[in-house]
Structures are given as C-alpha cells and as structure tokens.
Length: 144
Image (tube, rainbow, N blue to C red; front, side):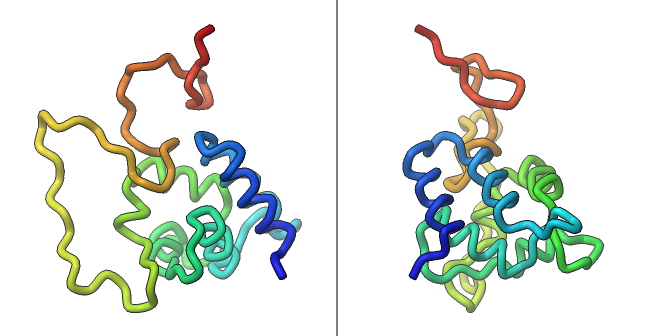
C-alpha cells in the first residue's frame, strides 16, 4: 500500500513536472518533524525515490554531504542551498543500488564553450540559459 505522502509527491511530479523545487518543498513539509522542520535520511530516501520513480536509491552520500554538522536531520533550506551550490548533485551523490558508484569514473567538467546542461533530476538547480525570462522564484515566465 502506498503512503498518502508518496502519492501526493508522485501526483505533483506527474502534474507539474517543471515544478521540481515546489514539489521538493511540499515533500519536505509533509515529512518534516513538527518540532524542528527537518527530515531524516530515511525520509529523504522516500522523497527522492518517489520523485525519481525508482524502487531502490542510496541517499547516504547525499545526506552526509548536506548534513555537515552531523545532526541526522535536514531542512528544506539546507537541501536547497546544497542543490544550488551543487547543481549536478544527483549524478554526484545518488546511486540506484547499494554498492555506490565504484567503477564509474567522474566525468570531466565541460569545456568552456559547452552549453549548460540540466542535471537530470531537478531543472530548478541546473545552470541557466537565458532563453526565457524568469520570475524571482526561478520559474519561467509565460508569454501569451
């Protein structure tokens, strides 16, 4: 049986695929503890597995990289700040199996003339190409 929170996250991903940041914020609000507004590593795993549509996801490296104070908890603000500083975090820190990324050499950084590429998980944190106007929250303005 699916948890109602997972259902809402999955529905948000399907209905609003370009609103990944808003979906993450919603997910954090649904899973966070009332006393501190933070989530655990298990809750982050549940959120990201639901958003990515995968059954198995190791988030321990990502969680440890964000939780630099080793509190065992993450807030949405910490997650967002980390994702803004590391736009390729999904490729660098997430693994869809429990063995990590052994045997996969890190890809060299892009050449200076290369176009910015999306990170494959969260376009909200990908390098921007100024083809569209954006609103203060990072959404693309619609032109009628």
